[in-house]
Length: 207
Image (cartoon, rainbow, N blue to C red):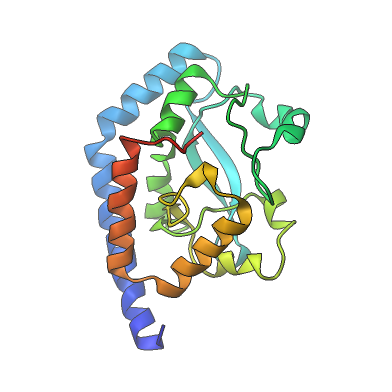
């Protein structure tokens, strides 16, 4: 991507991020409230939101927001579940993860747990579209090739998410992310956003 085109795309992308995030927060404010109420009903002592350290562009650490979909001590219980990992490479995915709550299972299936990331988008440490922001422990296992995922701002959704998500292994995810980075333009971003919206109502691959 030439410098001039890259700069113009960056302006377009940031504009789309701000408009899209603000519109999403305003239009879905009632959905935010309903989800928060159900999370509290199921687990009154636990928080509504889950904040986790993630690695962003150029290795910068930031805190990513989600609706809490797991029990409060989920991170502490991770070690006992690592042997049940169902994806290859530097990720952990388990279809029947016992740490997921009943409300959590629904909001994960529909990707509604990701909605608070719209605040990350407004802040600028995430974009609407980009590679999935990895955990610190995942990046520690990255090869130099894998680190290319960190060349751009991470996204709420991306080519990986609309291409199979949890059914795709780590190596395939990296290839899809690098394909996005090489091809990215505003039309490509809009197509991915549109596909993401469709998947929210018919998601078989999220868990």
